[in-house]
Length: 142
Image (cartoon, rainbow, N blue to C red):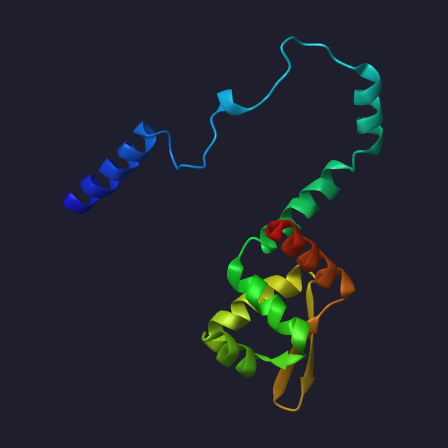
């Protein structure tokens, strides 16, 4: 119970300070001083907006990239086609943990695999994966 009070106390203290140092409030966001809808721009944007199911699929894809372990696996696969045993050793994780993450990456069509005897080797599915990661890295390094 004391642990809960301590954690909750820090949470309340954080809220009292306005959250993390870098957090923004709604008042910090620039916005129009009065409402004026530009119908031509709304029409153009709507005409080019992907379908809802495509946007959902895209959001799901980006969720897959939202895990640092999966990003580490993808970076390892940048270097070479590699088996689960070697991935586990490289990343300091269990084969079970690696396999779980590879299953998610495979479902998202980001990696492929091939069997060679008793070993299963994984590789990047295509150059799009490399491009997505490289562009994301460039963005965070700006």
